[in-house]
Amino acid sequence: MRIIAGKYKAKRLNSPKTDLTRPTLDRVKEALFSIIDSYIVDANVLDLFSGTGNLGLEAISRGAKFAWLNDDKNVAISTIISNTELTKSQNYVKITKKDYNKCLNQIVNQNVLFDVIFLDPPYDTKFGVNTLKFISDNKGKVLSDNGVIIYETDKNFIQKISKIDQKALDCFENLECIDTRNYSNVVLKIYKWR
Image (cartoon, rainbow, N blue to C red):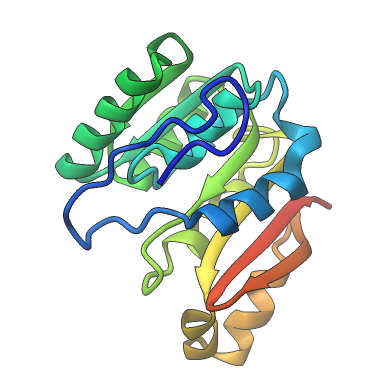
């Protein structure tokens, strides 16, 4: 796993020796950043299920001004800290160890808005869908007016959920899915305000 472009280009990142985290593959990350390139420069970025810090640090490398990296696992937090030190990006990041709901509530309480939000939760959970609903229900309190959310999941999860839930993935009260991309088993869904 490495930083693909920008000021930390080719910097190798650490990945924990555990199956508790699943870093985004380089080829998927490259495709993802080519889609959202225009949103990155000077952006505030949230990587809610950060794992290794991979996506947030890639955004900083490409010109984002700030990344909030959150995870609820000790092994992930130690990896994020290590990768932040490797890239010397400590001045650009905030690292928190919280359940995603607690992190979202902290963000709302602190009035922080994000231009880019990465959601890469464990594939076999509804954490991503729950987060999208929370952001939709809290319009103007997490995602900036022109912001974008990238939700990474897999085809197996989408096939497992009911047809009603599949429709819900494309349409929330205040958010809409504007693009869906498939990369082998990985599915990227992109959301903006309605």
